[in-house]
Length: 320
Image 1: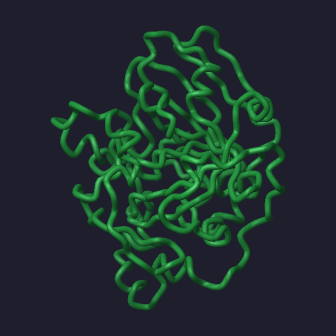
Image 2: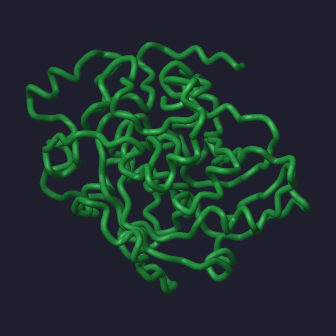
């Protein structure tokens, strides 16, 4: 495994509020009223350019019309994002505007019938699009609800035509340090990599996102195409995907490579298994100032629990 040695001021995704984990300022910020809730509930301010309306029909699916709590306002979500390619703080909306999304393609390779590239614009006319209102739970113990527009990952898997020997998907984001200044930080293992089993990718809940709030996807959300896995912690939902490789061996994910004891491959939401440095029993709902109990699989157990049947012996490695 490639060992990353970072300066003690380099923030991992685990920072619950900007600048707080490594410098131990979280309690100070909370006492001053500048925690995640205060940031999210602040008066609306710049969040980057407003994307155009989504150009294709995307009806809201009945099965995903209600996430069990209100949709988080767009102006909150659009200025509270983890996107380390553009900075290790949450307010990356300005820096992310440098991302060039025109003509974006995804390479499908590895254990497939034929390697190919597919343009995202072509995908939007080739797959059934829908809107889904889904919960998002971060390992930092905050959450939001987003009306995503996209399609099932299984449709992209079908396009790739994987061989029977393919057991996992290895997903990779762009690599362009000239555009994404965060990628100039040598202690991170760029480009960002994530992985899923074939069974997880085939589950109807696995969603490729191309829009949100009725619009083309905000760049800080991971334009032009990202993954959303609502039953897993947010770091599993890779942004700005450029490559999907079908492989036989389990890939090592970005955060797993950095700190495997804190960010495992599975990363299923489980309130009973704490992060090594904080509890996962509750979560802060952005924009409300409320803390609510965290649900197993983020409340999506009925759709995904069967994927992990018989794997209980893996213990916390299965969930974190």
